[in-house]
Length: 215
Image 1 (cartoon, rainbow, N blue to C red):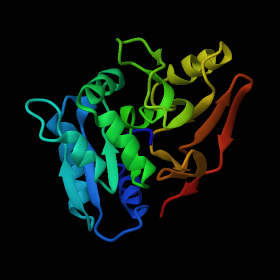
Image 2: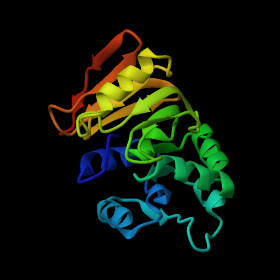
Image 3: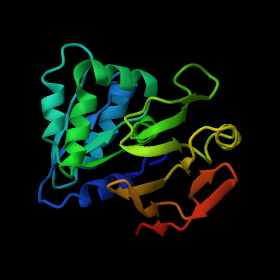
Image 4: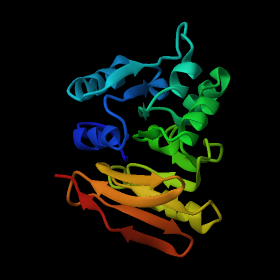
């Protein structure tokens, strides 16, 4: 997903992709420093969904975060600082827990940093006000990702220039647009805003991807 905001339809779809009733949904707000502003909107959305919600925080004194992530049916990752989030996950073993959850079929998703993290590489403002490449994502998905493609005027020129210069090819998504992967293959693009798009970006340019508008 490009970003959360009021993207209720995308958040609800993430849970609908789980194949069992009343799934355990784990929220990881690490990228925001576990800030309440990134937790409360998700609590409001998932409070109306038939699921069991668990907020797994890593600041302060975390309680078995890796074990709690491993057993989740779905994991939702908030936005914030991608690089800091990855570093903290690795300290606590959450990176491996996410891989284990994914390998047994859990649904993983998120917005901004929560979309960047699944790819091998991404474009981020984690290191300061200027956009920069990040090469050490979780690597569950090959290639690269760029969120907020239509919300930040610098995202498109920075990402396309990086890819032209040898950065891994990958995908970009406007806000309100989500990419669904089955395993490592892109299966569908969905959007809750008609004009929002996703793109496949290579050294030769960008290819708009057909998207299904969520009702």
